[in-house]
Length: 167
Image (tube, rainbow, N blue to C red; front, side, top):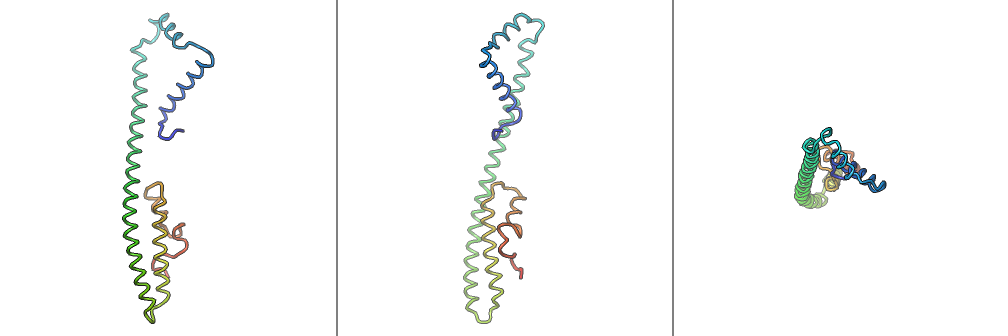
């Protein structure tokens, strides 16, 4: 399937291509035969005003399908752009926080009697936050479930380290 093509548009393309191939392979003059057929049976067959409306309706639906699809794609592109900008800002904020926490960790390491297991929890939390941000940056589909999966405990981002505060 072509990306962005609606069902009815594809059906219309299939019919048109099929008709073209039949004409090319058989050297048929379908339009001339159609006009001759209409001329011979002008009172028995559909007149132009009777078949023109269905054709126009079909083209209208195909056009509507394409316009709707283009709008949906534009909204999705904008949504992804806003998500990436927001994520970039959040990444900047969290990186600043991580740097400050590293300073606190260095001071804690120099403090006699500071529990080493607390430093490990801090290290694990800093690493997990970085991994989760990277997982969020790699997302292609931006919806609630994919975001939740990217930062869930035990996901690819958080497998190496326990959650913050877990001992």
